[in-house]
Image 1: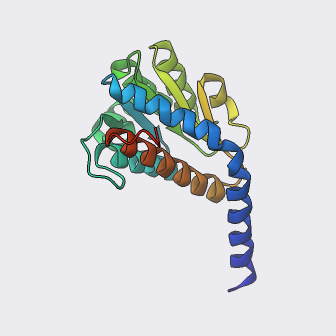
Image 2: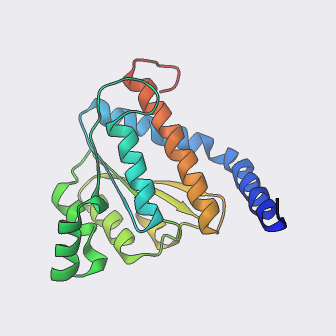
Image 3: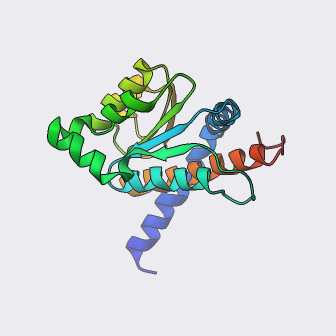
Length: 193
């Protein structure tokens, strides 16, 4: 293995070890999601670029399933509709592509989860602000200090890194851990939820 690959692996391991401190917060968000689904609420996810892929991955695990055969749960990724995205970007601005959708669909009891590596994208920040204004609960999957998006996050799951690859790798760990909790709850296993 070349030196740069060893360096990347060492940085990944360092981030994973530092992530141990986030386990209580991850569990708290998992319990939040289980309560929301129990009450018939919806999870809305979104992000830009690779973070949009993470948001879509999370939605897929919730609607489909993670490891257990269970009923589908309500989840929608806002970045997967190109017609709506380009309509809003064209008629308003790209900064509004998520906030307009959140204003239209998110209600009290729903959970709105943003995936972002920096927390600085205007479309992420405005969507979390809109979600909070609508009475939804907001979850930020971020990194570093969370950026301006942190101001509008009811729950912040911040990867313990400031580099995009490590942040996104830890986002994947967190969304898998949450998916395991939701699966267990939906399957009646109280040990996880």
